[in-house]
Amino acid sequence: MGEPKTWSITSFYRFLPLTDERVADLREAVEDRMHRDQLLGLIIVSPEGINGTLAGGHPQIESFETFLVGRLRGEEIRFKRSESVEAPFHRVSVVIRQEIVGLKRPDLVPESAEDRHLSPAEWHAWLASDRPRTVIDTRNRYETKIGKFAEAVDPDLPNFSSWADYAESGAVPKDVPVLIYCTGGIRCEKVLLDLRQRGYHDVYQLRDGILGYLAEFPNGFYEGECYVFDDRVAVDQNLQPTQRYATCPGCGLPADAERTCGRCGCQYVVCPDCEATWGPVCSKPCRDLYLRHGLPAEQTA
Ligand SMILES: [Zn+2]
Ligand SMILES: [Zn+2]
Image (tube, rainbow, N blue to C red):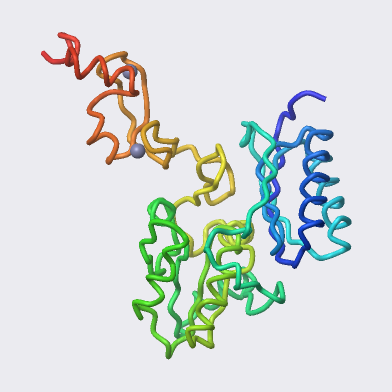
């Protein structure tokens, strides 16, 4: 079959209760299917549902989607599509976890997939209006750093499970509607229930997240790029793999400062934190040389 010229990518999640036996069966069936059809990606299966992103040839991706809906006995699943010339994954990973998204709150299980969801058009219209709202980005700080809805509050979360600390701080006003969003919608499913438990009754989430919004409003209210959890690093407003960001060799987060290594002369990209720690070098081997010998003479002159 060979590698596809263009990789079709599909992202999806579905909350639904699965017995341990069905979790194990589903994991195995999905993994077999991925090997058979040369699909790459990461899928999480859990007693609360399934979540994943896959890449492969276009017909194989389409047939996977049909297969998954069949395996879940016809449950509706919302698939978000994009494309990439480079492979966004290099392995097949199908793992079993307690939650399909890591809030450390397996007790929060969305019952209806469409509960308090705004379509991208409804979301866009609200943001274009002067209707009151507090917009909150529920993603991590390394994600909001490279793009977000302009007016959104950034809780500056180091990771998703720190959401509770932020919510407890009382920073979110209770008397205006709260609009929340994340990459594809899954994190907001839990945040919405969490906020409701805390007494917020007017909370809405962006259905299909930023990826769904950009598919309909590429030059709307979202600014910058959208971090994704695969080798593309981020996608731009047209859902194309980023031209701007690369993975920082030090920390693995997005970086866009282009440098020439003071030891080996290679071009590399680094984030400000790692540059401050590593000095003007591209990698650990070059850093070892730099610490022992400093920079070569022509560069220190
Ligand atoms: Zn870094
Ligand atoms: Zn180097």
